[in-house]
Amino acid sequence: MAFVHDPRLSRYELHPDHPFKPLRLELTRSLLEHVGLLTPAEVVPPVELDEGALLAVHDPGYVAAVKAASLGRPGAEASRHGLGTADNPVFPGMHDLVSLVCAGTVAAMDAVVEGRALRAVNLAGGLHHALVDRASGFCVYNDLAVAIRRVVDRHGLRVAYLDLDAHHGDGVQWLFYDDPAVMTISLHESGHYLFPGTGHTYETGKGAGRGLSVNVPLEPFTEDGSYLAAFEAVVPAALRAFAPDVIVLQAGADAHRLDPLADLALTLTGMAAAYRRTVELADELTGGRLVATGGGGYDPYRTVPRAWAQLWAALTVRSVPAELPRAWADEWRERLPSGVELPRRALDGPDDYPPQPKRAQVTRRNQVVADRVLDALTTIWRDTGLSTGAAGRGAAAR
Ligand SMILES: [Zn+2]
Figure 1: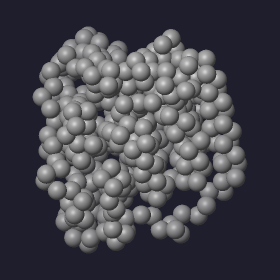
Figure 2: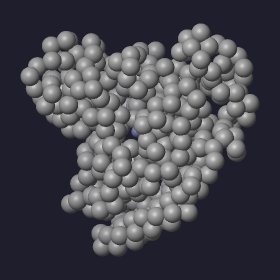
Figure 3: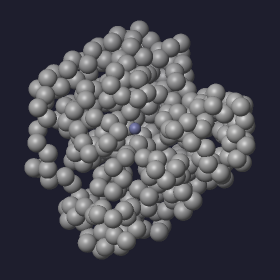
Figure 4: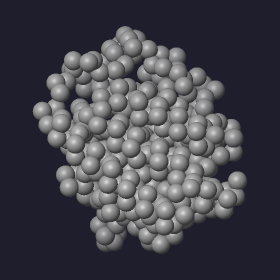
């Protein structure tokens, strides 16, 4: 198993007041070390990445604009590319830093497809909103798309991308919308309520990618049971139909109940169950090969480190002890904002949150959506010959 780390990656601070907190990476790594789940032998650095890998996904004019902005010379075209906004402020060294995030996700992918690790994670990655020529939603370059594009082009592999961030994985979806080698699946809070406003059930791919874009928009206040039921109704069937060679999991941690930027209401127990189920599906379908990234997650002290500790535990088929070491909280107390205390338990307690008042209604609506998604896609897959799970498999260079 490979855990990508570079101290520079935790400097991805857009602005001191920005909700995207790089400290969550350090807190997660520190927690894993305190519970004995991360050893030096598992840590790998980002690869050396040439600019061609970025240009295989992003528009050259956009990359040039990011570079100019990184040097403190944002041109007139910066705002056209979504740079210099409240969501995507420009900062010195931005190009190098976001290139390094891409290099980290590529390192995770390389470790897996070259057989050095069965599963790998780059928690600094998961910048799923970045578009061809535009920064969006705290994301400048799309590390996921860079890594996926490279493995499709170099190795001819079929990649299934599963996005569990609370926000729709729009950047990755649009970058591969007509690509027969990539299936994208996103479970997210419905775009009717949340940024980026896409990820509707009717976004199913086009051309050679028809039927390969899968969206499960969920109701605000969706809890574990309903979330996992929707996951189970759609994700295994989609993955089995597509028969990928490798699965990429974007594990944004903002679906948790305490996240301030989204309205899903998962607990760490539900999130961990989804991670473990994804690992099981990789075991079933790809010989275990799975590349994971972080993503969103704006409750940086209580939620994100614990969620991503569960992710790493799932990838390495181990478990996080129920009681977290006091030494972890002690080590960080001085460096966190005053009054912030790191949690003592690995999971949320059963009585931490009252049931959501609209639970029955939310559950019913999610079930209707999941059934509708699967019905529509099954029809398309039958049409395109994908339903047997064998259509593309023979075509892939394995
Ligand atoms: Zn998000």
